[in-house]
Image (cartoon, rainbow, N blue to C red; front, top):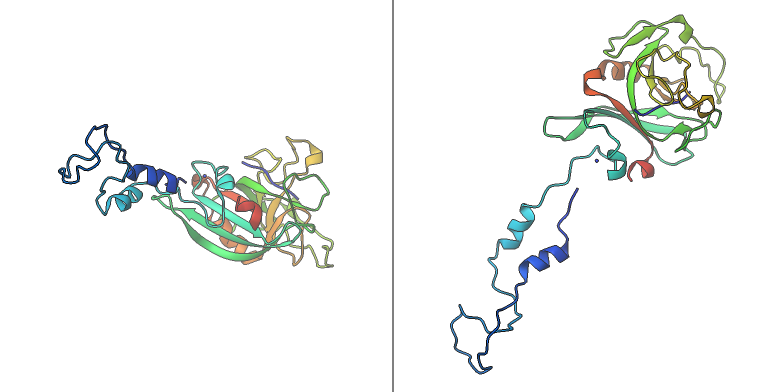
Length: 263
C-alpha cells in the first residue's frame, strides 16, 4: 500500500561588525595635535567610533525571528508544507531501512507555533524501510509530505470529520511478514495522497503516476508487523487520529527517516 502529496534568518557576525565600524573624515591636522576636542576626530583615524553599550543588543533584538517549524522538521522539508495547513502527522523512522516508527500529530496555532496535539504513538512502516522514490513491490514507504483527506473502512465511522467510506471491500485476510494475522487491518484507514486522485474513496484504483509507481498507501490498523508500504497505528490511536483530523485545517502527513525530515 502507498501515498501522495498533496518553511529563518540570522544576523551574521560579519554583518554585526560592519555595523559597528565607522571610518573618519579627511584632515590635515598635524600628528602632535593631541588636545583637539573629542567632537573633531583626526583625519584618517580608523579607530572605531564610540557606540552606545546597548546598540549591538538592540540590533540583534530587531533582527527577524526564524519562522516557526514543525518539531524535528528542517527548512527544506518544511518548505513543502502547504501555507494553509495547520495539522501535520509526523511519522519518523530512525533509519532508512527500519520498519518501526513514531507518529505524532502537531497543530499550528494563530501565532504560527507548532505544538504536539496527540501522540506520540508507535507505528509500523514498510518491511524494507523508506524510499524517496517509491515503486510497486519495493516494500518501502514513500518519504515526503503528502496531503490526507479521505478515509474509510470495514467498520462504521468512529467520528471522523474526513469523508468516510464504509465498505465491506475493506476486508482483508492472510498473514503478514511476521506470520501475524492481517484480519481487521482495514477496519479503519486514511488514504495518503500518493499516486491517487484526492476526493475519492481509498478503494479507488486510479494511479495518476502509473501503476508501476505503486498506490494504495494508507494509514491503517497495525497488525503487529511491517507493511507493504503503508503506515500502521494501533487501533485506538488510529481512531483518535480520525477524530482529531479536520479537513478545514488541510491536514498532511510528513514521513520518513529522522535525518531526511531534518533537512
